[in-house]
Length: 441
Image 1 (cartoon, rainbow, N blue to C red):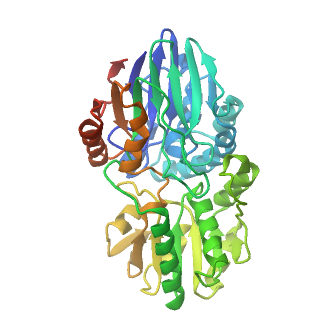
Image 2 (cartoon, rainbow, N blue to C red; image 1 turned 45 degrees about the vertical axis):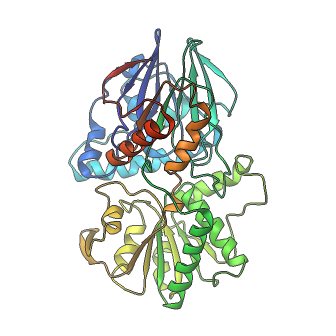
């Protein structure tokens, strides 16, 4: 087998890996680069391989930095099959359309033609097949199996076996045990691993700590008569947040205040969670709708949130504050010191969310300068990514067999920190691969 990295190296986004075995060429993920405008403009560049020669694409999960360029791949001539778990396909249909609308706005802003269209997304979905965890599939001379990576609904680590060599692509590994998904699967027996490192040098708060921080923030914001804004990724973080807020209220740990889910995409994706409850952890009933929650689908309903007096909680997309309805709420409420912005996910370099996290005193939102007087808080424990100790624990069962780890999907410092720990603590060869270089396995 030969492996070439065409994205997701020394950066979190843009995952795109080419695996070759004999005459078979397979892609693992085909994601958008996200973050600063320069990075986003790179999405318009040609693919460094011929899309017509790709036999199949295997998707680890449905986040746009892993699937966002699939419509472009199809537009440029890819005619193979796409494979993932059923919930990943279901959610991808929604997320791709949302992404295409955002990219159309980006294209107009930079005077470019649209990257792809809704028609391209429909072609992608027609080529998309589903396979469940642990149900092997053969492509060419490769046997392929999916394992639960515990990151979001339906997310997978993928094992490829040509009869001589086994390689696993971790995808994004979950921060386990996740409230909705439980534990991820152990790393299967393999010779090589391509491993994410978004939090390769960090340690999260534990589950109890993060619930206590959320409890305190809701109580403090309510007492101050303020607004708690939560920019949330539409998939997983939003559903986790709904689940935990409802649980805290049920237990009497927080006051009952109006909760607004202000994201049509997140509302539709919550329906996907309800549809695939068999992918959620088995212990106990999981609800995503409760008494204080109002789901605002229309623009009119969203605007009406401003007429509800504080205290209130607003959960809205996007997770990095680089698009979506959260921008309108941040514009309205960031200048008031009674209010709080809670960051619960990864913030790419260059994004508005990263500026706020880094302590900006003034930001530009929808063309206007907005002073930042609201409290900016972050809870790392709500990340859907495994932290360094969890990443190492995932590798440990196969430490005697693993020949090499390719560390990807992390900013340079996080990838480098994980490389050092893997070498020092597990005595496994680990490298940050180079873009465009072909590695023989």
